[in-house]
Amino acid sequence: MNIYGNTINVLEQGLHYAATKSKTISQNIANVDTPNYKAKSTNFNEVLRSAQTSSIQTYRTHEKHIPFKTQSFASGVFTYSNFQSRSNGNGVDMDKEQADLATNQIYYHALVDRINGKFNTLQNVLKGGSR
Image (cartoon, rainbow, N blue to C red):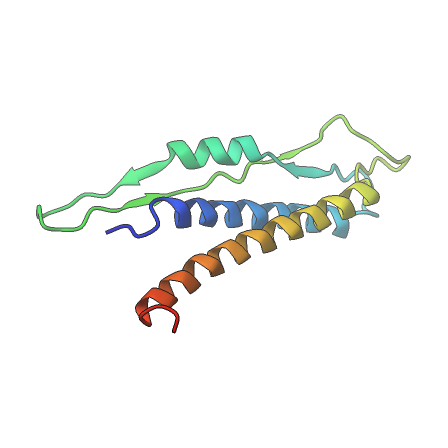
């Protein structure tokens, strides 16, 4: 029985994307003074495409075994190879990275809030509703 349909799975994929984007931005910020470092970015379309096409159906040895799928996620991280913002060859734009980090944190917290709402609803139902 799937209580929320595919909602929890979609929210999980969104959290995975936000975590990957956060790691990428953190790497860029950490390497802001590294000569010839090329900034990296996360491609949402690539992550989404990978998540939609990479589910693996498991092998069941008995017809009463519950079927489930596993998914592998592509990172969707790519490097800006022809971008250079400073004379030392470093491609990190600190203002852009900080703005992207703030946007990603808002996105991440919105997803966490949505998941909490789903679980709070379930918890309320299990307790017998509000009284």
